[in-house]
Length: 105
Image (cartoon, rainbow, N blue to C red):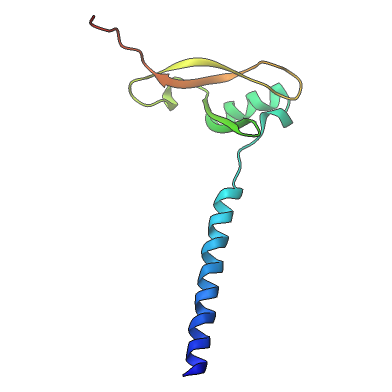
C-alpha cells in the first residue's frame, strides 16, 4: 500500500509539472518588438503578414493591419504610428477601430 501511495504522489507531481510547463510556455510567447527593428523592417512585417500583433514597448502591444480587409464588420481603419529603433513615429499601417455612430440626441 505504501508503494501505491508513493506512485500516486509521483504521478501527481508529474501532472503538476506538466501543467506548469504549459502555462509558462503560453506566458513566454511574445510578439515582435518594434523598438528592435528599423521602420522599414516594421513596415515590411505588416505588409507581408497583412495583420500582426506587435509589442511597441515592454508592456504595450496592438494589432496592426495593412488594409481594411483585415478588420471586422463595423470597424474602420485608423492610421498607426509606432516607435522603432530608428524612428520615433514610424507609419506602420493601420489599426482597426470601431466605427463611430452618430448619436441621436
